[in-house]
Image 1 (spheres, one colour):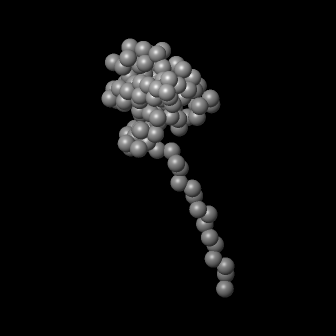
Image 2 (cartoon, rainbow, N blue to C red):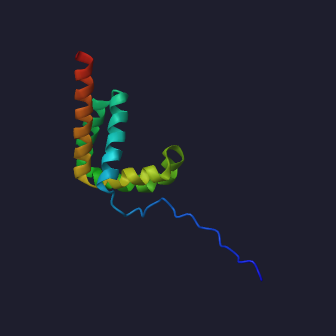
Image 3 (cartoon, rainbow, N blue to C red):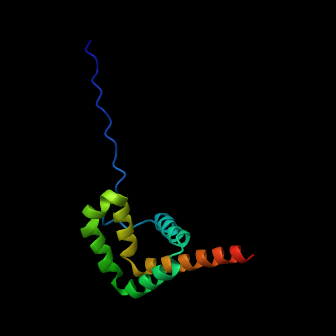
Length: 114
Protein backbone atom coordinates (compact mmCIF):
# COMPACT_ATOMS: atom_id res chain seq x y z
CA UNK A 1 0.00 0.00 0.00
CA UNK A 2 1.62 3.30 -1.09
CA UNK A 3 2.15 6.00 1.48
CA UNK A 4 -0.10 8.99 1.14
CA UNK A 5 1.72 12.07 0.04
CA UNK A 6 0.88 15.02 2.18
CA UNK A 7 1.06 18.44 0.69
CA UNK A 8 2.75 21.12 2.76
CA UNK A 9 0.51 23.81 4.12
CA UNK A 10 1.00 27.13 2.44
CA UNK A 11 1.02 29.92 5.00
CA UNK A 12 -1.61 32.52 4.42
CA UNK A 13 -0.05 35.92 3.96
CA UNK A 14 -0.70 38.35 6.78
CA UNK A 15 -0.53 41.20 4.29
CA UNK A 16 -3.85 42.64 3.35
CA UNK A 17 -4.93 44.19 0.12
CA UNK A 18 -3.48 47.68 -0.17
CA UNK A 19 -6.93 49.07 -0.96
CA UNK A 20 -8.61 47.46 2.05
CA UNK A 21 -9.73 49.86 4.75
CA UNK A 22 -8.33 49.59 8.24
CA UNK A 23 -10.64 48.15 10.84
CA UNK A 24 -11.52 50.44 13.75
CA UNK A 25 -9.23 48.53 16.10
CA UNK A 26 -6.32 48.65 13.60
CA UNK A 27 -6.90 52.36 13.11
CA UNK A 28 -6.97 53.08 16.83
CA UNK A 29 -3.89 50.95 17.47
CA UNK A 30 -1.93 52.71 14.73
CA UNK A 31 -3.02 56.17 15.90
CA UNK A 32 -1.99 55.28 19.46
CA UNK A 33 1.40 54.02 18.32
CA UNK A 34 2.15 57.11 16.21
CA UNK A 35 0.87 59.58 18.82
CA UNK A 36 2.84 57.88 21.59
CA UNK A 37 6.04 58.04 19.55
CA UNK A 38 5.53 61.73 18.83
CA UNK A 39 4.82 62.60 22.47
CA UNK A 40 7.75 60.52 23.78
CA UNK A 41 10.07 62.48 21.50
CA UNK A 42 8.44 65.77 22.57
CA UNK A 43 7.56 66.64 18.97
CA UNK A 44 3.91 67.49 19.65
CA UNK A 45 3.96 71.08 18.43
CA UNK A 46 5.75 70.49 15.11
CA UNK A 47 3.73 67.34 14.45
CA UNK A 48 0.39 69.05 15.10
CA UNK A 49 1.42 72.06 13.02
CA UNK A 50 2.50 69.79 10.15
CA UNK A 51 -0.67 67.69 10.31
CA UNK A 52 -2.96 70.75 10.49
CA UNK A 53 -1.21 72.41 7.56
CA UNK A 54 -1.31 69.31 5.39
CA UNK A 55 -4.70 67.93 6.39
CA UNK A 56 -6.29 68.99 3.07
CA UNK A 57 -3.52 67.11 1.25
CA UNK A 58 -3.71 63.96 3.36
CA UNK A 59 -5.03 61.80 0.52
CA UNK A 60 -2.27 62.95 -1.82
CA UNK A 61 0.24 62.29 0.95
CA UNK A 62 -1.12 58.78 1.43
CA UNK A 63 -0.67 58.11 -2.27
CA UNK A 64 2.87 59.51 -2.11
CA UNK A 65 3.61 56.97 0.63
CA UNK A 66 2.56 54.18 -1.70
CA UNK A 67 4.82 55.53 -4.44
CA UNK A 68 7.67 55.88 -1.95
CA UNK A 69 7.14 52.49 -0.32
CA UNK A 70 10.04 50.83 -2.19
CA UNK A 71 12.34 53.43 -0.67
CA UNK A 72 10.75 53.62 2.79
CA UNK A 73 10.02 49.90 3.10
CA UNK A 74 13.55 48.76 3.97
CA UNK A 75 13.64 51.21 6.88
CA UNK A 76 10.17 50.82 8.42
CA UNK A 77 8.66 47.83 6.61
CA UNK A 78 6.44 47.86 3.54
CA UNK A 79 3.41 46.70 5.52
CA UNK A 80 3.83 49.61 7.96
CA UNK A 81 4.06 52.08 5.06
CA UNK A 82 0.84 50.69 3.58
CA UNK A 83 -0.94 50.81 6.95
CA UNK A 84 0.02 54.45 7.48
CA UNK A 85 -1.00 55.19 3.89
CA UNK A 86 -4.45 53.72 4.51
CA UNK A 87 -4.69 55.68 7.76
CA UNK A 88 -3.79 58.99 6.13
CA UNK A 89 -6.10 58.50 3.16
CA UNK A 90 -9.03 59.72 5.28
CA UNK A 91 -8.97 63.25 6.65
CA UNK A 92 -10.97 62.22 9.71
CA UNK A 93 -8.11 59.92 10.76
CA UNK A 94 -5.68 62.83 10.61
CA UNK A 95 -7.98 64.74 12.96
CA UNK A 96 -8.15 61.71 15.29
CA UNK A 97 -4.35 61.58 15.33
CA UNK A 98 -4.10 65.28 16.17
CA UNK A 99 -6.60 64.89 19.01
CA UNK A 100 -4.77 61.86 20.41
CA UNK A 101 -1.42 63.69 20.32
CA UNK A 102 -3.01 66.58 22.23
CA UNK A 103 -4.56 64.21 24.79
CA UNK A 104 -1.30 62.37 25.44
CA UNK A 105 0.60 65.65 25.65
CA UNK A 106 -1.86 67.05 28.20
CA UNK A 107 -1.70 63.81 30.23
CA UNK A 108 2.10 63.94 30.23
CA UNK A 109 2.10 67.60 31.27
CA UNK A 110 -0.41 66.93 34.08
CA UNK A 111 1.66 63.99 35.36
CA UNK A 112 4.76 66.18 35.42
CA UNK A 113 3.01 68.96 37.35
CA UNK A 114 1.13 66.67 39.71
